[in-house]
Image 1 (spheres, one colour):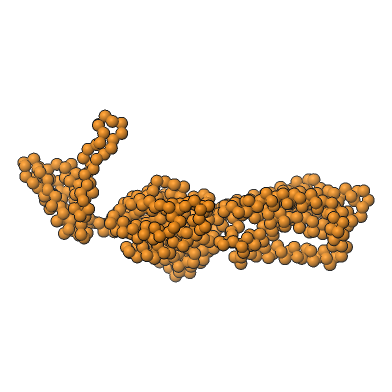
Image 2: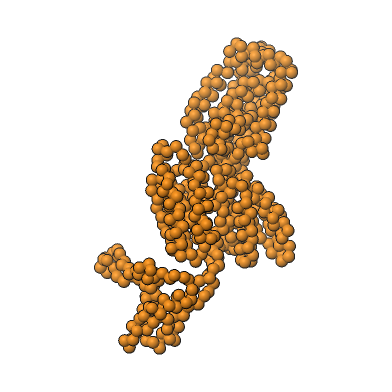
Length: 551
C-alpha cells in the first residue's frame, strides 16, 4: 500500500503526468465509443439462443396441391435425416404445428391449406452436442433452400428458431401502407428483391396471398330441380369425390364426445392428372347420383366448371391496407442490414418516388406521377431493439442526473459531484472493451446486448461509492492538517484494499453469468466494467480531485 501511495503522490506532483493520465483516459473513451460506428463491437437486442428444437415453414405458391407440398417436404426431411444431432422430425402437412413460443406471433396457427406445411425438428440435448442450434440452422438453411425451393417455382422455405427474448414476427419486418392494393403488391415485390440482395438477410418473404387462377364448381339450381336431385346429396358426393365425406360416428349420438368416421377415396381415384376444365368435367361425368325417379344422373349435368381468380386475404392494420415483408438476420444484428437495406431502397425507388423520413428509420414514399403516398414502417425485433436501447439509455441518463443532484446536495459542490459522476460514467470503457475482448475469443459474434446495458447501469452505484470513499476520506485527512496531495495519495492507498476486494467479489460472482448465452453480456459488463471502475477510481479520480479547488 505504501508503494501505491508513493505512485499516486508522484502522479499528483508532476503536472505533465496528470495531463497524461487525463489524455490517456480521454483517448480510451473515444476509442471505445468509436467501436460502434466502426462495427468492431456490434449491438443487438439479445444474442441467439441455443434450443433443443426449431421449425421449418414450407410455403408453396397459392393453389399448389397437397402432392406438390409433400414432394417438397420429402426433400427437406431427406436432408434433415442425414444430421446426427437430430433426434426426430414431425411434419404437419396443410397446417401449422401446435402453437409454441415462436408460433404465437409468427402466424403458424393460421397456416391452413394444401400449399403450406410446418416441419418441427427436435435436437439432442444441449449438453450432448457440440454444435449449437442456431449454428445448425445457419449451416442447413442454404443447403435446404438450394435443393428444395427449386422443386416448385416460387416456393419459400424459412427456418424458424425459438426467440431468445420477446417474440416477434421476424428479425426485420417492413410494413408497407397504402390505399392502392395493386400498387402495394408491385411495390412490395420491388422491396422484397432489394432486401434479398442485402447481405446477411435471409428467409425473405411477403406476408400476403398471391392472386391465382382456380376452378369453381357452379351448381345450376334450375337443372337440379328438373332432375329431381337433392342439393345436399350433390354437395356430399362432390366432397366424397375430391376430399372425403363424414358418414357416421364411432360413439353413440348420446355420447358427450364424438369420433367422426370418414369415407375417403384412394389417391388415384380422387386425384386428377392435370388441372384443367376438361379433366374436371370428365371427373364430374364419372360421379353419378340416383334421383327421386330412380335414374342415375351424372354431376356434369347439374354442375359446371368455371375458371375464376382467387380472393386474396385483405391485410390491414389500424384500419389501413398493409403488406408485410419479413426477413431474418443470419447470426448478425438486424440493425446493420436494416441500414444497408434502407439505403438500397432509397436509391432504387428514388426515380419513382419522392422519399422523405417520417420517423427514425421510417420512410414516406410519394409517387411522382400519381401523387399516391405510401408509408414504409420498420418493425420486428429491430423495433424492439431500438425501443429497448432507447428506454435503457433514458434510464441511464436519469440515473446520472439523480446521482449528480444527490451529490450536489451532499457536497454543496458541482465540481465534486461532477467527479463522482465522471468516475461512474467512465466504466463504460471497460464494458465496451470487454465485449471486444470476448468477441476475439468467441466462435460467434459476441454482441453488446440489452443485458449488457443493464450491467452498465448497475455499475454506476458501485463506481459512485468508490469515488465517495476517496473524497470523504481525503476531506477527513485534510481537516486533520494533512496537505492536499498527501491526503489524496493516502486516501487512495488506504481505500484501495476494500475497493479491490469489493471488485473481486463482483468479478467472481459474475463469471458464471459470462458463460450464459443470454445473460453473457450482463456478466461481461459487470466484470470488465468493474475493472475499469477500479482503475478510474484509484488513478483518474485522484488526479481530478487534485485539479479541483473544491477540496
